[in-house]
Image 1: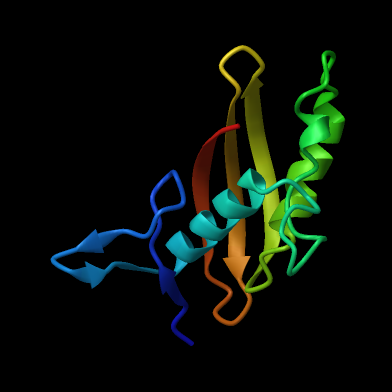
Image 2 (image 1 turned 180 degrees about the vertical axis):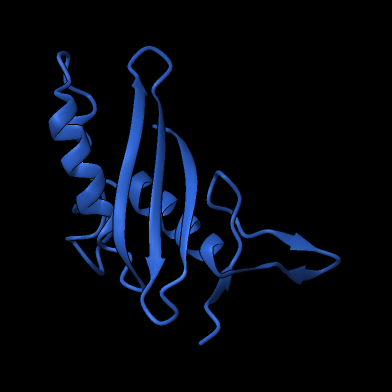
Length: 122
């Protein structure tokens, strides 16, 4: 099964090149989906109130790293074409509000494993 989706930039806008929509494939679909889920406040998306990240875990004055890790894993599990999401490490800079996530995941249908990093400006 070929997994594909429309490509979006870091602001969520569709990417158009030469008057054509750009597509993403394979692991890039997962990375893009994870980025979008992590940028969505849980309960904000009216068609699926369970989709998204609990932002309050990030914006507390004394942010608890275990709670942030649990929130990231919960969000990653919302991308259903992949399994075995493993969070290697993450870094959240409370001053710049940049969340960097290094992880591995596996395609359900092919068992192919890949590693990736996502940087979010939250």
